[in-house]
Amino acid sequence: MDREEEWIRAHVEPTGPKEVVRERVWATTWRLPTTEGVVWFKASAATHRFEAELVPLLAAGWPDLLPRVVAEDAERGWLLLSDAGTPFETLGNPPELWLKLLPAYGELQRDATVPDTVPDRTLGRWPELYNDLLNSELPLTTSEVTQLRRFATRFAELCEELAAYGLPAAIQHDDLHHRNAYVDGRRLRIIDWGDSSRSHPFASLVVTFRFLEERNGLPPDDPWFATLRDAYLEPWGAGLTDAFNLAQRLGRFAHTFGWAALRRLLPEGARPAYDIPFQVVLRRALAHP
Image (tube, rainbow, N blue to C red):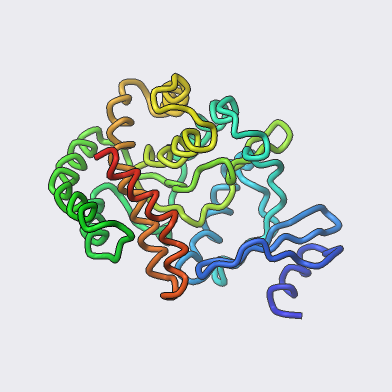
């Protein structure tokens, strides 16, 4: 028995073999049946060990919004979580569920304390991170890289405009889509906080809105997007529509920062497959400069 399984058995009694659901350089996830139902074990590498500190903190304050934490070891980056229910994906990713979830997520962002171990991608660092992106190997054509370089000065200016709204940095999930949002009875839960950072809160919806377009086929001008935006903004106060729209524009680029950081962790041979979805993310940003 390895040390992970020994640790798991100290907290639950498995009734069957583990299933390796996902194995990445930065984290490995197992699914295990137990006498208490299905549980999920996640072991994060040093770069993502913060998740084992972040999730218990958030779950303690918002127990209806995150899975129940069965056990955690922040020092080793281990988490053991109860099953979160049924993913939005299985239900067709209905906007009606996001209408209920997004205001609760906004309240969490507004009020949660973010541990210092969470990566710092705050708005003030976005121009710096943009330059880091420019100096990275990117799956783009020469003309697309040139377009990205030409936008650098304007990107920094727009960051200053967004900063003028005075919104505080907050936890930013950065992977808030139909596979990470769940229905658990009357509760809606968010899982997989490993891509999170301390950043501009409104950038979270870049991913949510992307998959409502791609997964559900909603056109960008569909009324659902304004409805969801307004619901999400309720906890933040009135008069922030322009700030939100600007955050979406810049947030498409900010979303690439996390992708670039993960790419640097990959062995050379794994990068071509990773670059296929990374290219999509980059091109979505370039399509809305």
